[in-house]
Image (cartoon, helix red, strand yellow):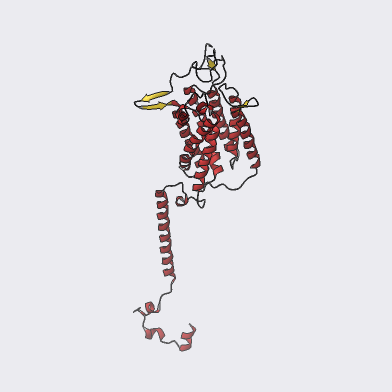
Length: 346
């Protein structure tokens, strides 16, 4: 064992009475919270209504968790359903024990966001661009859950930053005590990627999902390299792990999308309804704001009607009855000394 190394945590679960507090779940939840916070700030900066990203997360998070777990179980089915499976089939449902495939999480989570965007009448691509840096940060935080679970580490190494893994863990090599901390490599890569995306987004007009495409391309580059360091069992095709091939395919797709949309300049719908600032037409607002907006509109219309009626009354000429009611005018004096022709001429 090298003189310096990163020690693994002694435990990843703390019991709060009868309730187990799992570090893996805490990392996932913290990542989601930070992603929503970053997304909200970026969405408001683009002119979107506050609370929209939080509302979308209600759809995205459960869809993403289910998608991530499905991808993991499908690609590592032998861990649960094989003849010599180390886990029981029911363990496939125990998400808190680890095992989320990012590709499934992004894919099915994207379906949830798409449904929510359609319900609100806002642009999916605009939302994706706003969320891209936050998703990268969430992945970087979530990877620390693998650290607490002592899983998904790399090949043996003896550098000062190598990770100590307890003997007998799945994927360990006999005689080796420290391994590449792939969780740390990917976490740092994700944080750096988020910073680059924020920088590019502030300097370049990357719209219509192009910033999200750069996030996908950037993540797959790092994932391809980091995946090659891992030694845990995985499906291989032509000497590459399945996740590496997935990274290649998705990278090509992301670059193709970025290129094909390079000249796209159509307007993206940021605020639902007529595109104005009226919260009564924005489904992202609650009924209280909508009712207040409707009452304000009704009050303004009433005032406008009252002003129009007042202006119309002031423009009417005085009636004959009003003229004849004046007691100061003497009919005899008014017509004295005036001939009929003169009176008619006036």
